[in-house]
Amino acid sequence: MNYKGACYKGFPDRISAEKAFREGYERYSNRALSLADNTEAPVLQSIAVDAACSGNPGNMEYRGVYVEDNRVLFKSRVYEGGTNNIGEFLAIVHCLAWQQKNNFHYPIYSDSINGQRWVSLGLCKTKLLETEHNKDLFEVIRRAEKWLRNNDFRVPIYKWKTELWGEIPADFGRK
Image (cartoon, rainbow, N blue to C red; front, top):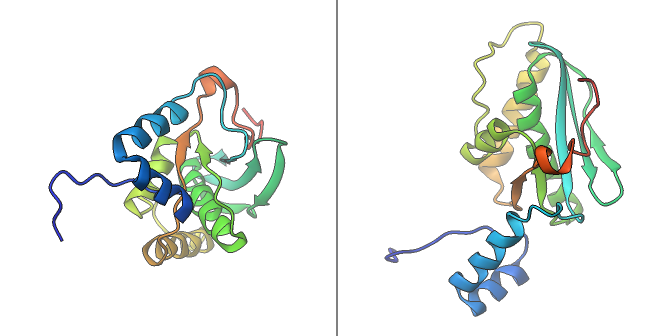
């Protein structure tokens, strides 16, 4: 059906969506915007993801950390021949799949605009070529893209404001 002026917004769960529907789009979107743009501090009940890469391409890994207590929730193995952008993309997708599997609905923070953009497109837009050296990594990329195509589970993904909050909690500290 076509609805003139329709606005689309994802919600972490059905209860939140129904509440927004009852309150009206304007009221909810203004409150959601103020929460997402909060410069005082990040939402503590959230998951921060980050990647690290030694070289470009090089050995790449990623992880997810619960922001409130800095607990590592998941960590990838080290993949050869990767890039930081690939790791950021995979970290977000892994976090989405991990939350779906564990029935969590926490917002995700990432400091990677490319990773967030690629997830919204459903594609890892890397220019890196697949080789014999990094074929395992490209298999994981294909699985992540397939997961995005086949699952509609989504939670808000926010940009981590490093300039205000310091390094993202999932940072590997290798700068």
